[in-house]
Length: 182
Image 1: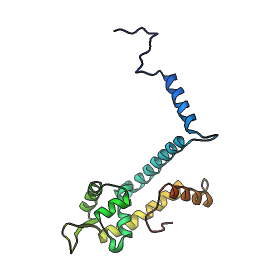
Image 2: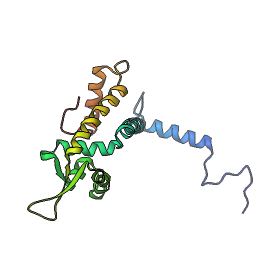
Image 3: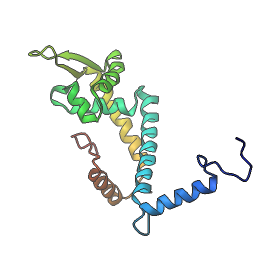
Image 4: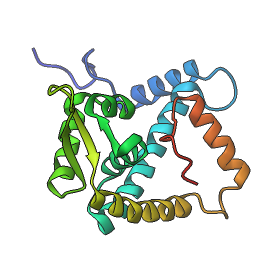
């Protein structure tokens, strides 16, 4: 069956239809003036992506690690004895156990993390920060603080802004690893 140019197929939308649909969806999610929940959520995702890219760039160029690697090391450093069961680390990071295993493998290869067996149960393994890992993490923390300070520059962000943002992110479930990092 051939279509005439003036005939639209039902499974295709024209660009102006897409714009109208997006506007309608935005209006449907907006309770009143200002951005609606969907717009707000999408802005948060874009902001998170920008922050991750900035941290990844700073940490990888100077230390050869990603923000995800840094976060794993930070959690381990704050755990008693600098070690955690892999399943507990997975839960703390919001990852699967296999995701943590994949994430820890390169850190083990470069000597920042070691695998330790539990003394009482051979089925349990710990991820432990090595002395080299602690030293390198201290250097990474310096870089991470610098990246954060640049991202939240005082000319653009007041202390009140940062406090408000931190409170709102905590309300969304965004909690920092146990230690106050400043």
